[in-house]
Length: 138
Length: 406
Image 1 (cartoon, helix red, strand yellow):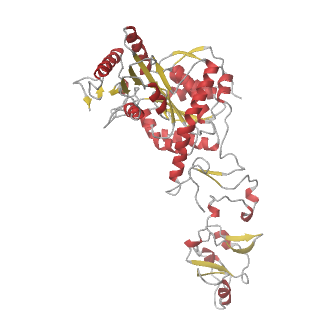
Image 2 (tube, helix red, strand yellow):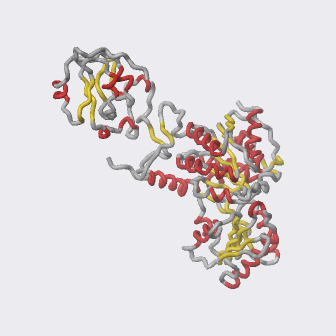
């Protein structure tokens, strides 16, 4: 998109979060919010990532750990059900995989270019020798 | 609702009280202030009004002038009518935030009671702080007496808050010579004063919760230039016409007429002294005395220092033969600011006027009528010779051997 000239934007060092008026924004789901072009939510930072998390719903118990721990609100959850990952804003930190408690994990890191179908086909099976880990205190 | 104050038609006020009363009458929402001599009484009086129920707004005491202007910026971005006051070292500490206020297009009113900048530390009036603000993107009005200090505050609010302008404005007055000199000031009723400025019309305010905004964003080489250009465009094209319109409306209300460039005895003047602040009235008196002797002496006062009234000045000076630019600030390494600005205003015109520069009155040193008579004598000699007969820059009122440059 071509950037506007000096006379083509609103005055002040000021940016709007949304296009037009918004009411009850806290109860409006992100996909329904009229985010403006200048809102950071509109920008994709997908190219910051070299590894991506992929999600396998067959093992997910909807515990919401990934949603709670994601530092960039990139786990999409609706009605307490894990839906998927916001790949425009996920930076590939891997915290969601780290905190996933299922066996096997429901989230795993893959190279950025990995095909999702292929990854799901190669998903590891349950490790019967794994001991339940006690949470450690730092 | 704030109590109204019954004022006499003429009150005996110094410049500080005149400014405080104007702030009270326009019902400022937020004053964030840190006191400094000689502007302290402006916010002190205002705090008194606030404590006694004459003001509905908030008075915020902060820990420095940097914090004072930062508080003003926050309150203005939130959507309030905002003002404060400062001087000298405090003004210098505010400088960083002055650029933020103008770049964020927030119509804050700052009363600057002009005072010298140290070292050596000095509490008296000169124009060093006013000149320090000249590139900050603010509109700068200059008062020559307490009446001007009162009137120009109303003009400043009206112009700055206009949605076509949306730039902050300073109202300058000379430390002690105006700020602490009590004179008769013709007043407006609270109602007339408030109605002249009108109710504050917010723009992009943070308290408009239906339209969330982020103020004070960062831009790099991709946007910064465009933002600064837009700001300059407003200051250069919108401000002066709005100031002139406000002056005209104010004249209708009060009979007191202001001009972006004030002239006195200039109709047929051959010799012109250009200065600011209290010096203008001294020069006017001297020009009258010289006129009585048949010398065509005139005075030009800069009422609006920023945006610089280049075209208006060129028009006023087009037939003058010799001009003295008087600067009450140490120019530190060059000619005085007024000399520079006037030279820039006249360079591409057909004028053959001789232009010279005088540095005077630093740290509150008096400018006497005798000094001004001497300046007009120099100008007469320059006019007769058709070229400078003195160095381009001379120090006047200074002890020790005569000091001059260029």
